[in-house]
Length: 253
Length: 152
Image (cartoon, rainbow over all chains, first blue to last red; front, top):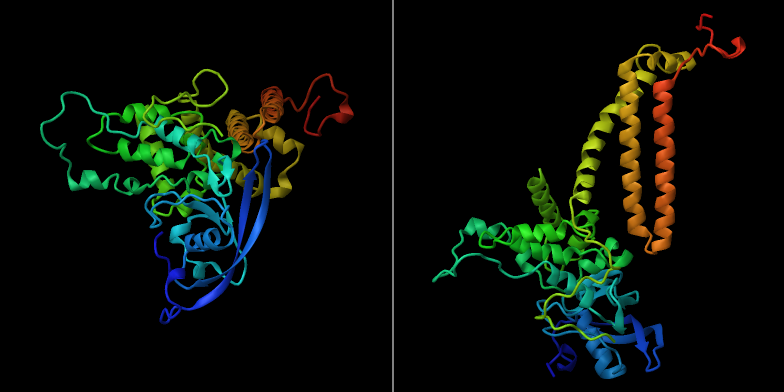
C-alpha cells in the first residue's frame, strides 16, 4: 500500500483538516442480473492536501470495502480514474477536495454514456472500439529507413497538442452527442486521429479522413466545447476536431 | 459482463444495425451548405426587411397591392424564391440534426423526421407555386373581391 496523507502523523504542520461528505453513486449488480442503484453518503476527516482519490481510498479502506473504482498511477497520467465529480468530468487524482466547496456534499458518479459495470467502473470497450477504428499507429509506405524518420520542430509542433491525450474518456463521456446513442466516434478518437493526420511522417491521413468522414464522424460535432472543458490534459479538443473538418473540406473541394 | 476484446486483434465491425456504410461526403456537403446558406440568408432577409419596412413609405405601404407589385418583378420573384428555398433547406437540415441528436429511439426518429420532411415539402411546393402563379387580378373573379387597382 502506498503511504497516504491519512497515514501520516497527526502533526502535519500547517495543513488544515476539515470534514467533507462524499455522495457516491453506487451501482451494485447482483448474481441474478438485477442491480441496485443508489447514492451513499460518506463522512470523512480529510486534509487540505487530499484529492478526491484520497477520499475514495479512505472510504474503501476504512468504511466500505465494496466501493469499486479504477485507479492506477494516481498521478494524472494513466487516465484510469476519470469520473463525474460535482457534475463535471475530472480525474479524481487531480482534483483537490478543498477546491470543491467542502461545505456541501461532493457528488461522485461514473462518467456518462458508457455502460456501468460496478459503482464508478464503466465498460470502456465502446470508447476503445472507436479509438481502434481510426488506426492509432504510424502508417508509412516504402522501405523502412535505416535511421530515424526526421521531423523539424515546426512539423512536430503542428500536432503537439493532441499527443498529450491519456485516453481517460473524460471528453467523450462529456459530449452530449455521444450521450444520445453512443454511435458518434467521440472527441477522443478524433483527437488521436488528428495526432497522426497532421504528423509529417505519417502517410495514412487520407484513410483516416475517409474513416472520420462518416455520418457518425466529425460532422456530428456541434462545437459545444464540453470536451475542451473536460480535458484534464488541457488539450484544445474542439479546435482539433475543427482542424480535421477543415482538412476534409480542403480535400473535397 | 461482456468480455473485453483483445486490443491487438483486428478491429471488430462497429456495433451498429447492419446497413451500408455511413461514410461519404453527404454530411460534409450538408455542413458546408449550412455555412454558405446562412451567410446568404443574412443578406436576403435583411434586404427583404429593409425593402418592406424601411424603404419608401416604410411599414405603412404594405398591403395587398404592395406584395402584388413586388411579385410583378422577376428580381423579387427570384429573391423570395431563394429566400424560401434556402431558409427551408437550412432550417430542415438543422432540425434533422436536432432530431438525430435528441431522439435515440429509431421509431421516434422516423416519425419526427417524416413530419419534418412532410412540412418541408408542403411549404416549399406551396410557396414556389404562389410565387410563380400569383395573379392579383384573375379574370374570372367577382368584382367585389378584386383590389381597387385592377382594371376590368
